[in-house]
Image (tube, rainbow, N blue to C red; front, side, top):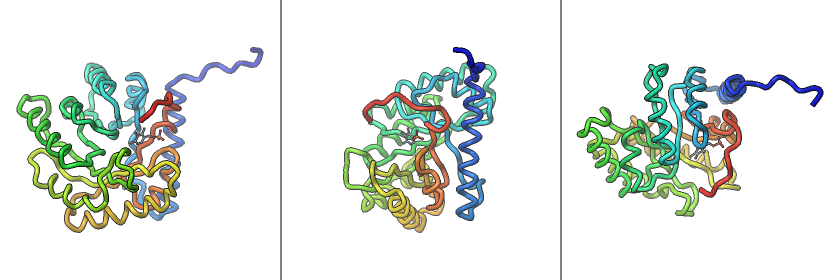
Length: 249
Ligand SMILES: *Cc1c(COP(=O)(O)O)cnc(C)c1O
């Protein structure tokens, strides 16, 4: 009450957190002998308002990860309506994608990180084609195959043994472009082991699909390990924007 500091603005708070995370990414790259330019920092803005996305935009970010509908669609619309936002934004769908959300997601997502089944691939291909026909989007959709690093199907992800077949399906589609792999290590697992496995799966995929260069791996708690194992995209929410409310899923 007597020695209150002036309140830190949300802008300053996010700017400092973003700089700290960039510092972590750079240090992890240096430690791994990698070029920091080869690792994209993708801010994850789920649960946080459009105002925070706008602050990140003002700080130079042009790509964002979202995972929930209709929250994501609403935020995308807010940013599109913002006259001060002139540069194109690349929105990534990083969360579990239900088939009844495919249609709306195909209107705003430039990248989907969570493709994990043939049925979903077909549904996305159809939805992106329809969105293009309707003039709701111009380009094809970049997709990453979410790889299941454990055997729990509830968590999402394609089993390692099914990666090649799913990759072929995407390669043969009209509106999807195969860009790489993504994974979320199971809770309580040894992330070093999991990220090493993902790197192996990625190496196998690259042999048949040389353009599938992206490895989306690493979050607030484990980005250093992911970068050590070849991640090219770290998805960071908490360390940039703070804690989210706890919800299931
Ligand atoms: C929420 C989320 C993140 C961000 O996690 P943090 O631990 O907050 O950095 C990354 N990836 C996926 C798939 C997520 O759903």
